Length: 367
Image (tube, rainbow, N blue to C red; front, side):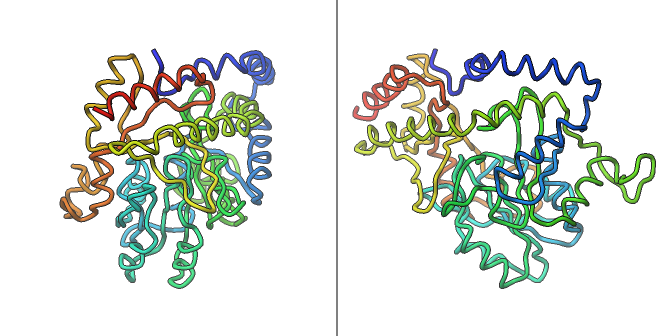
């Protein structure tokens, strides 16, 4: 079996380091927040070149708490992409705001800045670009739009730790940025976790208060908050992974280059484009084909893992029927959902395994 990703290999490569780190935390008796989480927050902020990072329970909470910190709620609108995981829009809905979708670029899957401006109304408060599959959105255009209309820009960078835009890290490109530490992410833990990065001290302080039941002093509560604290055990694991993630991302880029070089000549298969000024980290490696099912069946027959991200756009999900979107509203996003699929991509994919994947795709795409 050649899996889509291999978390077991990743863990085994740093098992002894993780074991030592866990012993230290377990012996400390401090398992929620505490000095290990603070250390992670400081190192995370330093790596992004931002002032603040605030650890929370997961990536979805990172989005929710950030929206709350900006006082976004009932009657407000937030523009985002329909081609992403539900958590992005769900967070908007959770704070009582309305998700408003803008179509994506067919070549990249990223939200198209040219489609955003038409969606801006007097109720729009924020834009959430999603750095999907490990590549950043066109942040210059998005930030310019936001400044013109006095909007907040919150990066959903959950899939893009280590990516760069014009030399600047994803997560340092907007007013705030949200990351997930779900195990499958480029920087993932052995459980759940998330973090918010920002240069705004006030927003960071609000999120710190919100994550502990709206409290800045124990047993004294200034607002209704959340129970969204990062575990020290996950922070310890993430500190180890943080030492290795640049190397892992370099390996991902090398694997992606081979895929692109070997598959670009195929007519029936198209790779997603890495945009100029971007340094993608390939959280996933995605292909597009009208013969998706045929190719995926052939790969499965050879025990090669595949998956579809994402088979149904958010505007067509049952949960958002009340927004009155319909088929055809976002043709690029819909076309991607009907043609896109992912093939094995992780830092521990061997040359032989990758060649087997490539050979199988070439064989079936030529017939």
